[in-house]
Length: 327
Length: 262
Image (cartoon, rainbow over all chains, first blue to last red; front, side, top):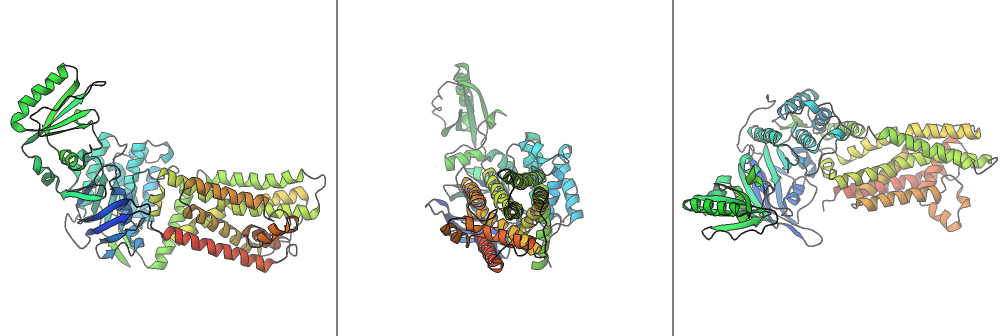
């Protein structure tokens, strides 16, 4: 698809987003953010991972001026976003976790009007809207009203609305919710393209498996604190030379004890996830096959460890796709 | 004029007056597009409210006194003007809060005052046809003759503006959707049954008439009625002052509510 702006790549051209020691304590005493510091360079896709209630949404609401930190600083380039929330709204575009309000709009109209409200010129916005509709395979719904669209299509229209004229920082809160697998790939491609155009992307999700493929760097936060930060590869480094064995427990059956040679194991929903040393793989397969044969488990999967393993280790929570191993 | 984003369609951050005007125009377009399924229905509801009230009150009397007919026929359009702002916006924002879309709209890069004025424009355009039809219904039902003066323009504009600002104050000042809905409905009941909008203040108990000297609804009716039937209403300058004070106070509440950041 065509582009309407220069491709700037991943570089710091003065528009780096920075949060410094951001702490948010609500009036009821809940400490939603506790000294969070991070930065996102232009062109970088930065994943903010964490379980529900970790403080991710609180952080992004402070970025766009809907909440004010108890202490700390938030800036984008030379702009102090806390002192100038109007600049924050101009420079940042935000896709919230909830659906955008487009019941009365036709899909293309919503994208174009949002681009116009964000300050784009009509001709450029219309051209870019058509590019996004094509790139996200939304052509069949371009003239349909939002009230008749499925949740997934609405989500994609919302994504197009906030990225048609994106500013310098795009904040996406669970952008793939309700989106079908094929169009998820298209959406992630567009997220990458935002980065390629020099826009900083802050991706908020608890879907670690998807985020791993899309992000340049990730931060894992829980209970308001930043637990770890780095590239997905660096985050997985601790598990290099290890394999992940997933055992899908049969309905009505109790999970078996993890094999004694497992380095660690956790039960996430109906899935027992164990991390093994590579030499223990044959024993792991044998153990899993016996579990299936005895009816305790329905199936198993053995594969490379992922970012999700690091995430689980740090937070103690499984990510949004506990059944991902079966796909 | 500063270019602040190269990627994608160029997003300009123009000088404040241009930014405000552009925000006003585009938010008005947004409001019209986002409410296009509902605004015609709202207009119909207002017509039913106004014309229904005018005709319904007539059923109480075999021969309605002329002064009562004037009160009813000039009060019902005022109810239209107040209701559109006082009821619709709080309900709309309450729905947005419950659906989670409130934050998306608050994050749009439009000056708050421009967005508020855009909504006022849309609300006024929605209310005016029902106001005219309600007035015509009253004239037809009671065979009245009005002597409409140019003061009808500031009276209608100020009455609708105050209703809209009060509605915005409730919508953005009360964060609990159910509470906001209850407050706006309560205010409508106060307007209908306990304020001298459709009847003279002298019909109220003394204490309630005194309270109403400081409440906006009776004064809104006074300024509008005085422009439709010159000489029929007393205390018009004071009524303008009271309504303007409520508009200003409501605007301050809106500014505070939209400026606070938890």
